[in-house]
Length: 343
Ligand SMILES: N[C@@H](CCC(=O)N[C@@H](CS)C(=O)NCC(=O)O)C(=O)O
Image 1: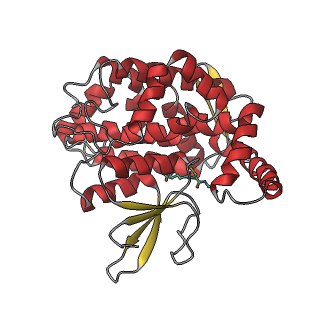
Image 2: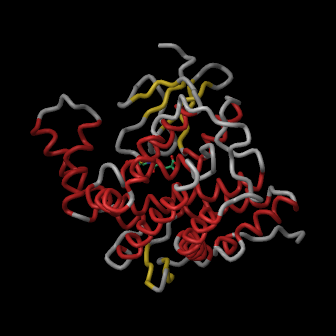
Image 3: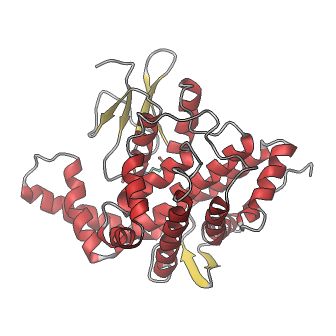
């Protein structure tokens, strides 16, 4: 196999794998997709998928995980068909929505999949086959039970529990409504060409609107446009996009602002409460989202995500920060950001 094909390992049931495959296709980056472990390749430091393998300067493979920085690395190594807007202020908005997709929508994805019997039944019986379809039904039945029990026992990680279930489900429906309105005018969240924010939301929606039965029913009944969008996003390798196709902060439509308002209602208070729990060494994250209680265990990775978002904001110059500030004003998202010391 040629080394010029970028190797990555993932699985069809993994929203982050789907995010990254769609980025690679849109960007016309030649890749080889491994759907099982390849023992000739190194293991990543953190055991997550998708795993990308990049050659180091001696030609040895290095395993990397975490889609957000990998997308930035690919932007540098492959200049064509970028998914990060050139305007720094728009790039920041894109980063924020990408993080919302990765860190908030995934709560809906994991919640629906492992909370309801129908969804558990479907995911539990299909997902283990992705490793190897030739295994016997007996082996698969055992895998179904082991896998389902393990995933159900991890619902607490994303904050899915009986208290938060209505918050997560209401927010999923409002997100679909916002995206549906936006798509009446623009083919992508980031305008006339897709940004990494589009791919992040797409990745989670591959599962939410096209696989897991309970959230799929919601989408099929009320938001067929979003369902169709997800199918189209899967492979944008042949779509031509204009250089200036991205939304800029000066011409951003109201529908994008509405999406930011939705992000401000849910992701923002939970990210802030989670970071505060770390600062104060608390055992529980507790806050109010849309008038309802949110309780979960602190989630270290998401505290880092907030720091990274603030670093991105800190990198903007005054002009760009003003643009971001005026775009976020009144959405609730402005609460995430801390002015650099010199302000
Ligand atoms: N922040 C990571 C998240 C990756 C992630 O959470 N992957 C999940 C599957 S979608 C995983 O590997 N979970 C561990 C497991 O299934 O054992 C990214 O953006 O790539």
